[in-house]
Image (tube, one colour):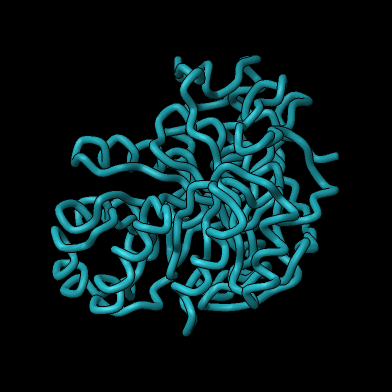
Length: 337
């Protein structure tokens, strides 16, 4: 196999603001694995909040090139094991890009979509939400009107969170989800939840700091809305920690290390009676096409990254009013343009 790295700066359609940061450009790294004239693609975005830089990911991937000089294709789970020891340190974004590229290559080599290789039924796939980042209330309303959707994820963590949801609710009857990105306290969460529920909010994502387990225990059984873990659930070992504390988990492929560990996390979460969501990291269609392969296994999905950026570098899945439409290509169905 040959490893080829492509760097891009994806312009965001709007300044994207959450409690951690604001950005107008999303640097992203596309990993291409080629074998016998077939290419598979994976993606990882530069994410300063997690200490993930472009140079760090490139250095990590350059170091494992000797491991790729094989004349055969092992199963993706075996491939992941062979490279994960080198790439699991710190935050495994580079490992994700490599793992997804390999799964895409595997599917294309066998001429099947991954959902078909796994024998999954796509007829009841959940729809994706569309994210409205923190901004002035008029600007948030404007963003929502630009993209009419049946389901919105609203970023909160401001001094006027309830006012934001009230204002947005006047403009649409769509379902809302809210993501506080660790900005609230237990008292705020318990105070806000009944008001948000009355305003048509489905659940709250990560209201408290990631390590505030005592605070989360205070909410269990008392919060008017289900609570989904995000920053509190990064790697496989975090899933069991979330059981009996959260109502569900949000898995990010880049944070956990790719499709291979995500499949294990999904199975473990379901065995622990946790709802399962997969989210994105404001990536291109390449990253979102990988998430799409997992849809039949999910309760919720947040895979609107390719709608938030001006993606002129890739193609694959498309999204129509929240419904994900698969590419006709095998693997993840993604490719560079």
